Image (tube, rainbow, N blue to C red):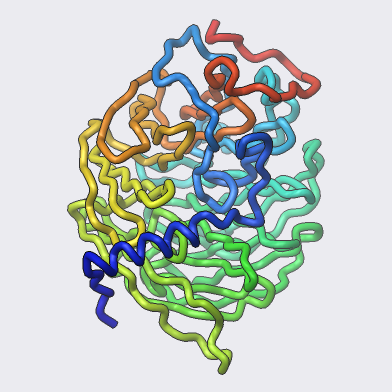
Length: 450
C-alpha cells in the first residue's frame, strides 16, 4: 500500500482529527493535580508517552542544585521508574557476576531495599550493559527482565522487595546482549523475546508467573523494542520488530489483530502512539534509519483475520532516529537523533517543521514536560529545548557521568539515572506543590550533591 499523500486542505482536516484523537486521555494514566503524573510505572511512563505534565523545571542547574543523589552498585542503563513515592531501577556488577534491583525513597534518595541476582555475565555491545532493561511496576509487584544467551528470566518482587516468583523463558541470542523491558496489561506481564533464534512474545500472570499465552514470532534480527499498551474500547498491545514490522495484538489472548511489515532493519526504539497513529523507527549503526507511521484501525476486521493497516507516512534517514524513541506533544512529534540533531514534524502527516543541532550522541529517549523537551546525551549532559514551533536550546546541565537512561517525572520532581547514580531535581518554586514525602529507611543519599 502506498503511503498516503495529504494535500494542503486535507492536511488541515488531518491535523484537526489528529488533535481530537490526541486529546483523549489514556485510561492508563494516573494524573494528579493539573495533569501532573503521580506515578511513572514503566520505561517512559504511562503509555510510554514520556508525558511529564505541565510542571516547570529549571532549564539549567549545577551540582549544588540537586535535591539528592544516590549511588547504585555496579553500572547499568535501566531507566528509573516511580511507584508510590519509591524509585526502582536495576544495575550490575559485572566483575562479581551480580545484578541488582534497587528501591529508593523518592523523597530523599535513601535505599529502601535491594535484591541481588547472581547469574552469568556475557559480552555485549559497548553501549549496552548487563542491566539495560527497565523495571516495570504494577499493583501486584515489581518486575524486571534480564538475559544471557541461554536464558531470558523474568523476576518478580513485592513492593517491599520480597521475592515472589521467577520464570525462565528460553534463550536470548544476540551479538549486542539484552535490553528490552516488559509491559503490563491487566493482570499480565507482556515479555518480548525477539532475538536471533526462535522468537516469541509471552504473557505471564502477574501474581504467579504462569504462562497465559505465547505468540510465536519469525526471526530476522534481535529487537529491543518495549511493547506499547493502548487502553481503548478494544485494548491493544503493539509490537515492533524487523521480521514483523508493527503488529497489533489482543492482549487478553495474544491473537494478532493487524500487522504491517514495514521495517527493513532492526528495531531498537519502541512504538509510540500519536493520536490516531502508531509509529516506530528502525535502523542500524550507520544511520540508515526509517520511521513509519500506521493508522490505528477503527475496529478489528469482522472476519477476525489479521489485516494490514494503512501507512500514514514514512520518513527517511535524514530525520529518523535509530535508538531514541520519538515523543509526541499535541500536534508536534519530536525526533531526537542519535547524533544530536532534533527534528520537529507534524505528528499527523510527518511534515518537517524545523530542525536544530544540539550536539552530542544519544541513546536515551526524550520526554516532554512543562513546555520543554528534555533528553540526556551519552556523555551525561541534560539538554533542554523548547516545546514549540521554533527550535531553541534553553539550557544544558551535567550529570557527571555516562547516561543512556530516560528520565522520569512525578509530582514536582524529575529523576535521572547516570550509569552508576540516581539524581533528583525539583520543579521551580510553586510547580511541585502537593508532593508528599514518604517515610525514609536505609542509609541516606547525598543531599544536593554533597
